[in-house]
Image (cartoon, rainbow, N blue to C red; front, side, top):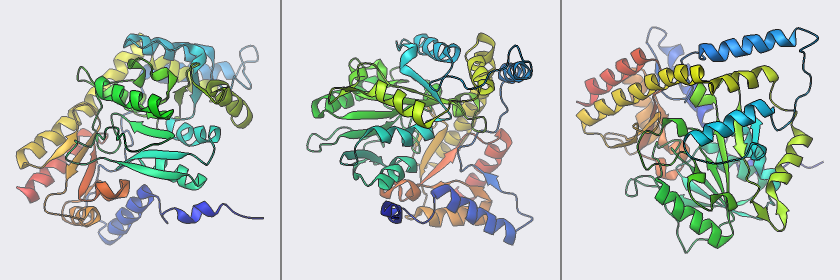
Amino acid sequence: MKINENYSRLKDSYLFSEIAHRVQKFSAAHPDREILKMGIGDVTLPLAPAVVEAMRSAAEEMGRAETFRGYGPEQGYPFLREAIRDYYRSFGVAVSADEIFVSDGAKSDLGNILDLFDADNTVLIPDPVYPVYVDTNVMAGRRILFAEATEQNGFLPMPDKSVSADIIYLCSPNNPTGAAYSVGQLRQWVDYAKKCGALILYDAAYESFVAERGLARSIYEVEGAKECAIEFCSFSKTAGFTGTRCGYTVVPSDLIREGASLQKMWLRRQTTKFNGVSYIVQRGAQAAFSEEGRKQISKNLSVYRNNAAIICSALDRLHIWYTGGKNSPYVWLKCPGYADSFSFFDDLLEKTGVVGTPGSGFGKNGQGFFRLTAFAQEETVRKAMAEFERIFS
């Protein structure tokens, strides 16, 4: 028996586990200090009442013989896939229900989709980046190249014609930087992918935060993207499903590689390795797209957007450089007076009790930067930014 030796190439600790360890150690040494958590991108507001009611009703159905359901379709119930299709239509994008696959979250699908591709592929990943993109490809032993995201390009790298890749990861609005691509910028990526014969894996988990006209909510706003892109999305940040677990992936029927349909390959993979998301959760997800559900969820999103505005206003007053905030729940700031992100993390925690995420944990280009999340309670955000102003004014 041999183990997968690629695991030895991974960092010893996952970024957010390291943060939790440092915070726990600090709390143990300072039990009376208030910790203002703005690090992990976990939501804090409860599920919308319409979602809760739909899940309660579905649970009651499961308790009656005449409405009980066992195994459901691995790709998701038609009622949810059709609701997702209609949601795309609401902002002008046409996808068919049979191109939509319901899952337990975008993170799972972003890793599992790699089952479709040979290890002998070159992967292009932005730096800094959500660690899952890198780690899942390290586990598989693929060659990884990095697209340089920097302060100079607004942390939105564009295609480099001198670089050739087979699989390209894009995330917009971006985690961790909050930067968002315009439709025109994504068109350049689509043209590049089609020229290279590459496939784009597009993470749209934060699309519901896009507020500025001209910025993309889906890569399928670009003509021709269905021939070169798979899109991943989630209810986690849109509808507060971080603990409920539901997401979806769009694999267009136009995606053909080496004569094989990636849509059919993904269906075959899912029917073999996945038994689907629970009926109760899918009913809750469907309710998130109802008229009442969208109104309620919009109120929650407005709270997070307001939190982002509070963060940005404080940074503006302090003349600290940042991206994100307006079209994202994340604010990516330049560490004031620090070249090392973890040194800033430790000092900020010691002096203020504020917890963020060191940018270097997302890649080498994150060194000297720091991520704050708007998903905290408003009171926490106001206290945290008051502390920022106290020590950096």
